[in-house]
Image (tube, rainbow, N blue to C red; front, side):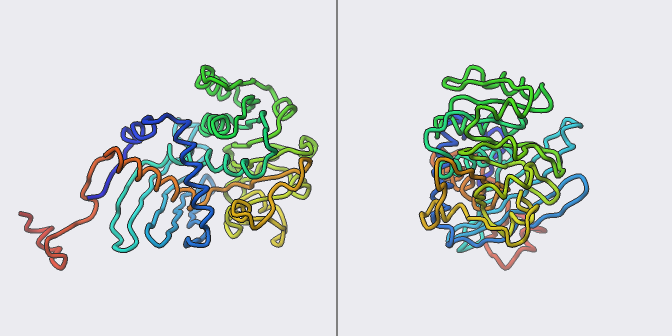
Length: 340
């Protein structure tokens, strides 16, 4: 049987500990998998682009497990009261190909995106940073804030969105969260004025300039999360030339990330190398660092592993007959036409 985790079971799975501890666990899983990066099959995600969005498959595997995610990105969906991002995932054993897990991955994507941002900032931001600007206060924002507070101890968050109701939604969701102070801002300038870390998570599929070079100060760390497909960016190109830029998988990021604006030989460092200690991360307290985050399959793999481990431990999810398991594997006809 394949274990199936739908939305209701996903809620149970995360709420066994709560969102913050779940993100903390996921940070550990991602960090552990990044430390064994060379063991994975890696390829840029398979994408079908249209003028209004993208549908993607994100596969990877190690010697024991194969995982993939189906995900879309349609920024205009919000205008029709639909999710911008929707996803499901699967995990299978390599030795047989049998699917072990089929699961909800829209919520999981938000959680793993936050966890990945936290991992990057753990290695790239100045130690002890307490303030963060969050530009774009949509579906991802609460998870980012909870993760940064839980794992890195960031306490003050300066919030801006072109839609003030998005910021009001965020504050309404988190205003009772202990140890988090939320500041409503009316401009990007106001949000970044006191920030040591900036996270951009806007949704529009356009070459936008959410941040300008004039707004960036020495010592800042930027998580550029929203620019994640061709023709979709958030940073003025000049910022990239003034900073040390870190990426997940260059072959993918050069197509989809902020560095799509730059020449093909623009220098970047892979985050896994910093985590493993083979490459330098932040060079000084005055350095400007950027994590050009587009999302990579190994992060989804980490989330699938964690979800499967928790589901197995607590017997969560529903067993389903996703694939046949006949008595005689050479006789599919009987299974279909003469069921007993």
